[in-house]
Length: 202
Ligand code: SF4
Image (cartoon, rainbow, N blue to C red; front, top):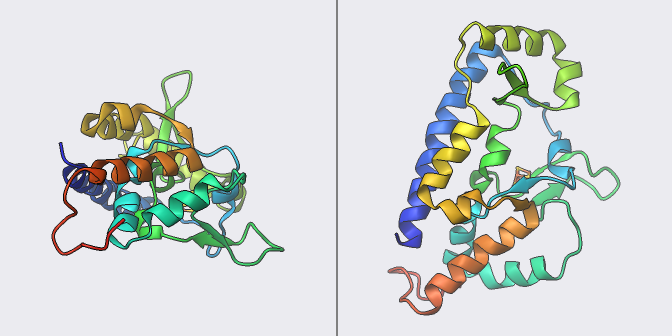
């Protein structure tokens, strides 16, 4: 399968998820706190390269892939490379520097569930939301266990794996996943013609 087909299929998966999440948000009233970027600053976020294929392909088309890969290779920071803090003094307020192209983990967290050891679905969300919206979180967990539809992490990762098992199933620290996504795109086009209309990509 070509890189472009994989990118389109990942984007289609994201569109389906985004639509499910907006319905879920309307029903539950759950929402992130405006300007909060704390979950993006966790140094142990893990992701697969495939979920960042749309991001890497977008960089490639805009001639930024090699430059971004060089920057990623020269950073020892474990916080997501894409994250943009509002200021150097307050790193927890900020936002995704490329929200449209954020990964699957970024979309799921806060609006999807995992199964606990009793097989019950539990919303996976952050401490801030649990404290700030405790009643909403409790009502949401109850509604989920009475049958409210919620996206489930494992289901979405299984759908991702169906696009490319190796690149969807390899879970790495997020900056490693970003690097591999770019490397795969660059490698693919190292011996193929660039997409039409993008002579200066790379
Ligand atoms: S890609 Fe964006 S949303 Fe995802 S962790 Fe990085 S900064 Fe946060």
